[in-house]
Length: 521
Image 1 (cartoon, rainbow, N blue to C red):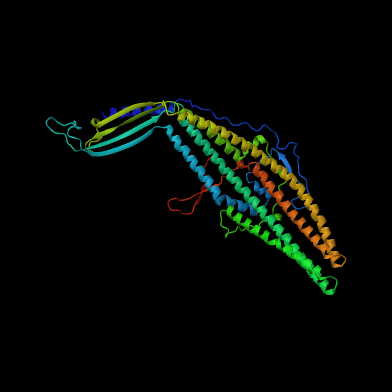
Image 2: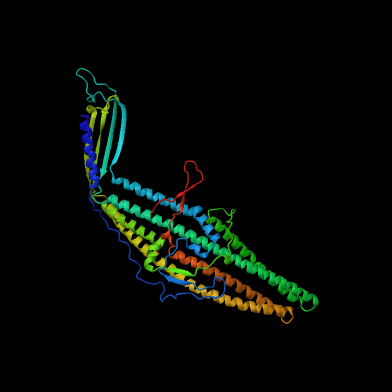
């Protein structure tokens, strides 16, 4: 009898397993298709010039746009700065925003795995010991020999295995898994976007720091020149070759130049705080790296992907595509919820008044039941839910198109900026050269007493403006080069070693330890 019960229950389990494998392959709702590439083959209205202009200033060489060249994953190494490379490596390990994005990805993948578990039957084991008393007016629950009253109260021990399985006839579970997988993939690209944004922000912050240091150096040089000129003017006053108004004008000029220094120092301090935050540190722990424009090289050959490639490279576009995919699957889920639901349940086990001898053929029982459910009327709730998912799909489709348009715009803006940055640096360099000649001539004339000090003040102001414009133009070329790499996607598809994820010990609250990033490829 025991063997017969085991065989019977095994047959039930086999039938449920076969039902799992033989579920219909139908999955209602739309099958997702990848959106078409933008119907354009270039970013600008007119053909893009193959190279920018150049000048003899540092970082003034021409940059060349190379169609179809791939982007290196560690594109920031093209700036040839060891300090920048080291700072980015620490940022990738410690930045909390990137770590949070990776943790969100891990949570999204676990939701996919949890939903995939519903492909299989649910099996539960149950043991239920009870003690109960029944009313004397009811028939006895337990059997007893003739003339013997059944025990009341009595113990009852039940041990059983329960199996249930819902047939995925219309693809409800498959569409649900599809939607969750698309959301996990979207989170994957959120990680890539956070990675790209972080590296680009560190590069731009380092360039901004270098530009501020360049402006501070130029201002200090002009302050030193003004102090020297003030000393000369005072000596001329003592010798009778200048008047008091000349000295006052030079003093005012010195004070005016000195007044431009605190705002630059303030901006530099704020930039250092930003770099500390990007590395995941507090402002009191500044990065040890110091950045100057002379330590950053301008990449000469710039990759330029086609618009059709851009939608595969940009993390934000890929994220929008996966959200569209998830919205498509949600339409299938809402459609399946309107169709009949088929479930099979089985349970078997043993029941006895005593725990001893519970597992005995005489104490065995089993049950096999099926259930089909169809919603007949629900106030049109399911219908409106279906219509809502279709509207959400339309919203996701428009959001995807907006993201693609924005991505193409970002690349076009970077290209235009690089062309004009080169022209701006050339013009600023010409301005600086002419202003320096004018300043030297004015200084010689004042020193020999052949010109008024006001001429020198004007020349000094002009030269300072020219030097700062050169510094800003050099920084703009570097920053907009970084912006182009970011706009093109940053080369994440060429990554060999994934970034690291730090997992907190929730139970102890200990500091996070470095582990391999969750594998989402």
